Image (cartoon, rainbow, N blue to C red):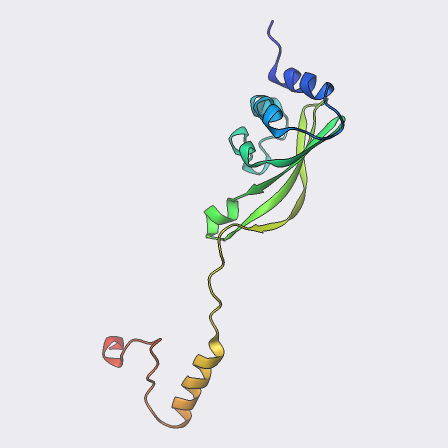
Length: 144
């Protein structure tokens, strides 16, 4: 009978030193074992997303790593990704991500729109009875 992917991961980490783990050697084994790991599908996580993981640390029996998730970017157009810390109990074959550790700015933010100058210009036009010449609004004929 062939050895399970989780057993190969356990064997690999069983010979690893405590602390930082080499991603290149670990990642193929973790990706192969991920479907066998209970809780690995939490928060829509799957093996195909593990390539974004980094900061792997081995503290037997737990393997931990950070990953930036892009859910908010895809769902709502956010420019930030959620940083999660995942922990895998390799002996029990269970994963969890009890810690969301913040956000990472992935794409540049849009420039801030300063409403003060526009409000001042509009208030001045109203108070002095003149038509607004603001380039921010379409000409009155367009407004109908």
